[in-house]
Amino acid sequence: MMKWNLIFGLALGLLGCAPAQPTGDVIDTVPASGVLTHKGAPIEFYQVLFFPKDSRPAMGITDAEGRFTLGTNEPGDGAAAGSHKVAVTWVGPPSTNPNEGMTEFTSPPPPKVKLDPKYSDPETSGLVLEVPESGSAELKVELP
Image (tube, rainbow, N blue to C red; front, top):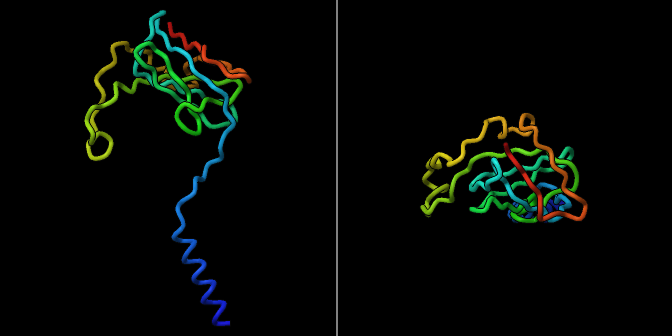
């Protein structure tokens, strides 16, 4: 009996040393990218979030042309197909400080284009977009 207790104890000890495994489910995605515009002009450094009804949200950040590529499980892997409520929030340009986010935290500069705060919440933005089953590289998030 003592032998089995020792083996069981060693097995538990080894399991405790195993690398951590991801806990979230991998969501099926389709390619999803597009452009964010305000009054017809592209806007950069905004985070675009797509919230499906029954799945994990997808997000992407706009570049200088307002283009974004959504990611759900990892950056750029797309979004779940179907209807999504959309939110848009300012994140600012990427920092050139190598310590940013590790030991230093600075606020981004103010945006060049200030959006109505309602767009930062998917419940108040009024934005709903469909990601087709085949995916899309032409999603258009157009803000007045």
